[in-house]
Length: 458
Ligand code: C2O
Ligand code: CU
Ligand code: CU
Image (cartoon, helix red, strand yellow):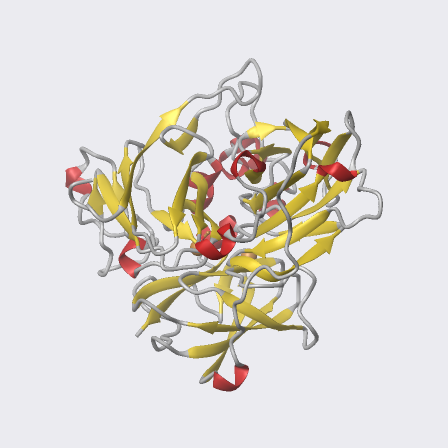
């Protein structure tokens, strides 16, 4: 693009579309390029990527690159609204009615250019809407997609690639009779049903699981290794994914990466617990099965429509020169001795409100102001299930409840799944960019109910 001669440039328009998700019906979605999931973007480490997001939806949008190490102006701060084209009169109105006023909001009309230096390791990132107070319904309608980063270190490993490197976006939805997405909080019949208000406190759960936008899909696979980048893009649902049947000897899900990229070494799992916004990069070797086998990925936390995720059908053996090296990545850990501050964050509800350290989200008032370059220890304490997410920086888990990190805590993380009444300690270093970012619960209903804090890097 002439404005950005040194960058990979993507021009995406957010619009309404009506794909056939449930056979025989049409579903209104909101999607980048009218797609759900949106187009998968691919970047190279160190090569600048600019994404122009145009808004042709009936509401303002905010686009966030989840896991991105990006300048504050391109991070998708919840009040940096992009108003639909032609709504010039709304420009300059920061925030939304009923929301705290944010004098610092940087709004635009029609489109915004998000500028990503891609100064970060190979990893599975994703983009999604982040509009203050409305992220949950916007993402539910479809505003989410993958953004993959590759680098030389990853290329040299010989992992499965090309059409054997497949991102899988897993999320739950509910449908009305006419095929429309049903968002329970907006559904008057449901709201009148006893018990619905309390279940909504857990966030909004659907009754069907979609993989890359399709219910209960089948993937034909050759009897060889495949890399799957698993993303839980659900508003609130947690999954425990298992292969059924497991391969002989077990350990069929070989984790090679986490939110922030490759692990130092592969870790074989029989099951993976994945909370909203987490990514697990796994290799499955279908040569451990026989041609003709059908393998189901099940969610052991669900049943019926939420227990069945997807199916693989194994065709014949093929030539496979991919491998999973014992050493994947050199990425030294942060040293707790260098931490200059320890901070506590209590994720707690109070009177039906979701708060961090007793505070509701205030975009204009930072809860914490880490120094650029600082290494810090952050302690998260919860009352309830909360997938805790930090923008800008990836962290490493030091401990859970005073003991060793859990089986799914390995590597660099930007989202940490916390059970009710848990405490975890992570170490993080703030590099690259000053300015406003956020820390929040990634249960999107909790997030919209203001369980979010402004983190201003100074
Ligand atoms: Cu995936 Cu602040 O978000
Ligand atoms: Cu994020
Ligand atoms: Cu929460």
